[in-house]
Amino acid sequence: MSKGKQDENEKPPLRWPKHLKYMKSSIVAKPPYCKGTLALPNTDFTLFYGSEGDAHYSIHLADACAPGTFGVAGEDVYDETYRKAGKLDAKNFATTFDTRSTSLVNAIRIELLIENPKRIQSEDVSIEPYKLNVYGKDAFFKAHVDTPRSELMFGSLVIVFPTPHEGGALKLRALGRKEGEILEWTFDASALLAQQEQPSIAYVAFFSDVEHEVMPVTFGHRVTLTYSLFYVPAESKPPAELTQISTNEQSSKTALRAALQDETFLPTGGTLMFGLRHQYPLATSYSSSGEHDKAALRALEPRLKATDGVIDILKMLRDAALRLVYEANWSPWSHCESFVLTDRVLPLPETHETIEQGAAECLQAFAGSESRGRDPGDDATPVYWVTGHPLRMRRTGVGARAFEKTVQTYGNEPALDVVYWRIWIHALRGSERPWRLRPRRGRLLHDVLTT
Ligand SMILES: O=C(O)CCC(=O)C(=O)O
Ligand SMILES: [Fe+2]
Image (cartoon, rainbow, N blue to C red):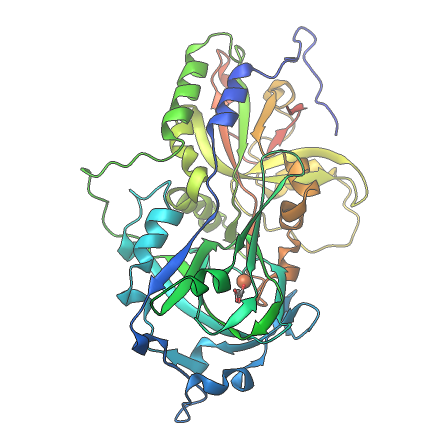
């Protein structure tokens, strides 16, 4: 990657400021899921399936299920090497088990959305049935992320019925903070259910950008109901008297306050980038006016998942806002030339023609860059990737597929108009020189610094 030119009289900072280290370590992530069991009255297990006027009991469930398909680049395909299980779409089954009559919404709100529960009320979360899956012996579902069905979808809920089975554990995976680190958690419903004295179901709710995989069932039938979790935009503000403190709130505030009070911390100003841990669905087809798409990133702010809610604290810095980062390469094979920061999904054309301009200029033009030519601030302002350097995200495991948008090719359903994006919080440490702070669309990021 190229380094920006430096002003003759200005030396680039050589050290990674210690305050940034503290800030980075103050953001501690909780696992991106919550799980448990829920005791239910016997009647709740009744499951009907079939087409209209032809409802059956659940006894021969395995026979009723169509082979499970999954999405590959917009088409529904059935491939036993990817997913070997039966499935029924929501319209073809009904169950007396109703999530609304349980405390599941509260569990999701309090355990999964713990970092910002003060912003989320139970009524703000909607649980929508998605699919019924039946896994017989040797059935599995390979690693995938759930296809986002709208910008408001934040998670998935899986209910495992207490049908006798062994194996079929659900593995969840997410990127760790260290380079190349992939964190993995196991939800073994058969083991959990075997310990219950009362009839119970097992549940797991996770952020839908979290990769998951169902391991092969070794005995019996594993029957699951999957649900999509959506935010319902709230009309009213949460009650002011309720104050909850999220895990990172105190430590991040302390680290940031200390940094801001220290005059030796980035004395000439600087651009700070915090990569969000989670990926978020954003629509890719937008009006050319650019107004709606800008609103998409702004609308996401109050819905940030878990530790990503740290944006509230980063508002102590200047102009903290959500941004996308585009990588400007000369060709698919060349190294990264530079990064272009944007406040929206760019309406990039599908083209195989050679573009005469440099990749960065081209991206800037699409971003509607206000000033033509280079801003002196572009070359001189160092960029500190406090967390989530884009090239690192691209190279490692789970995030690799996501950053390159190939998530589309391994979702659980064909859908291309809303896809997951990696998003950064961009914030500025003020300096005496106001030109450095001028917010610009399509800003070019140079002089990339990493730990
Ligand atoms: O059955 C499960 O445990 C998970 C199913 C799943 O991941 C899906 O339907 O997308
Ligand atoms: Fe899934």
